[in-house]
Length: 539
Image (cartoon, rainbow, N blue to C red; front, side, top):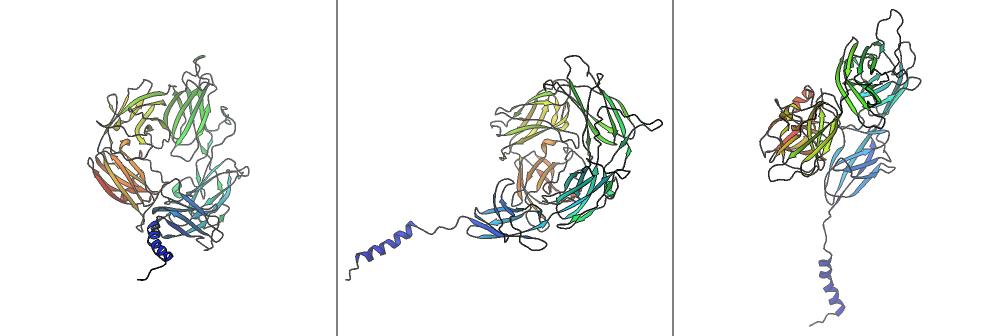
């Protein structure tokens, strides 16, 4: 029998022990590496910031080196959106790309950028003189999915010059809007004897010099191009005069000291105009008002900001002057309410209640309030008007509760909205019911690739198409999916839009251009359905 040396036995004994203490572990993370290059020349683009994220915010980033190469390491497995940013460039293609990271593997990410361009010119009046303070908009001729640079804006200088830069390659329309600011607020300019009433107003002008957007020419911008000489002449037209008075403006020492009347255009490329009431009789006048739809508002406050009162009315302006408008200040309303949780359940955390104007194109909110644990909420400083009630969550957590009813007094506010006037309104009651429907949405493009960052809209069918609280919305993640939960049972259509494309659900015609891409879906209580969508584009 051969006796092995003690050292040899110790070495042999150590081998299996070491293997047990340090087993080979599989990799838990992966990486993404690639190169950023110019999509036209093929040259590397240094200093580009490459961003990898799952959600819209956050993520990890790396800066491309002199050779355009980048690497993102120690990435948890899963689907991500890979985006790139560099001043003076825009991402090539239809938007950010989706990459799938696997443990122990390096995913290739080839990113291409295109140089942005610029469009410049001058704005002149009918006599050929330069006009300063003109607002220029360079807008895409067609909405583009995922574009981070949807267009650009500029204001003319003292020479009437403008330059809109950082424009992505594509086709654009150029427009100019002008509202004279001559420091004559409250001053009524006398017309020459025999001159027609009304002064000069300036409608939006589109290149090459038309006032109808459908007749506007499109301008093609190549990567890195600098287009010059796109001049426009403003076209003066007769403007209407809008006159009225603020009731109670001279009501004594207790009356507010400042009355400001605001004329806000709706659905027009124009700016708000305001008039500071100085007359003791409360008179106000707007000269040279273009035809169109407007919202006329009154803001009345003491110098200390207290005792705020308001008034609001819609106004249609045609070719004739308008006189005799009377705005009666009313104190903003306070609206209390309560959300009733399903029996035996607690309310979801982070709930908000908001009021949204029922007027198409109106962006101002009526108010917003956080809901307490007992379901109570209070909305303050609400301007009298007509509103829809919306319920939202700040946590993003899924909950199957849906809205069964919204009532204010005896009124069905889910269908008819909330109308606030001078009198104090009754409490608002929002009733939730458990076991709502759920839509698992997946959005893909024409190449059957997932579309991250798309907006999915769930719209109720007639006769409930005006019931704002029944609408649902979500935004797709890196894998092109998102969920809408808590759906009230009924019939709906589901649409998918490019990120950044705004659709006003209050406009009955807003969804018509997308109907061919919509999916009809019916939900019963507790029903969960998969909805496959194609990202729509307006025709």
